Length: 202
Image (cartoon, rainbow, N blue to C red; front, side):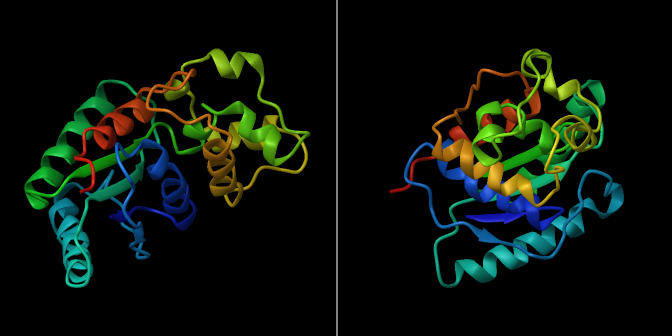
């Protein structure tokens, strides 16, 4: 399985998350380290997906390609524009990677809003960290600038992007991750729906 996306920390979050969502035994996760930005690609979308395909096919020379996962931060909330963009990206991905399972991690507003679905992971990583009850109840797909929100509200130590993979690792190891978590973030559940529809590995 190949994971591509915008940043190293985001890709590492997915590396921890994917085994918890995959419907069978999760295949080995390989990372495309070159940053790939799709959300605002417009006319450059097709060639960028072709770059990912070229890398994935090179890996497939030595191992069976189980699927393609692509991450992009929406930098916006989940609304009609999210639906439109997700449809466009998925259609283009399905065309380029025809015959290969795909999943789009289009995180609204950014991947930190996914992490907030698993509040126990924050305390597990740093005992002084605790999400507010209001944050646990809110529609996290509508939370603007989730990263800044955590930096402002978590307390010490200050939240950094490098904490993101550690938080997802804690969430998975703690058994908190499922395709339909207790919290609310439609962009996470759309991604989980993509992954859980993949065929089980033989």
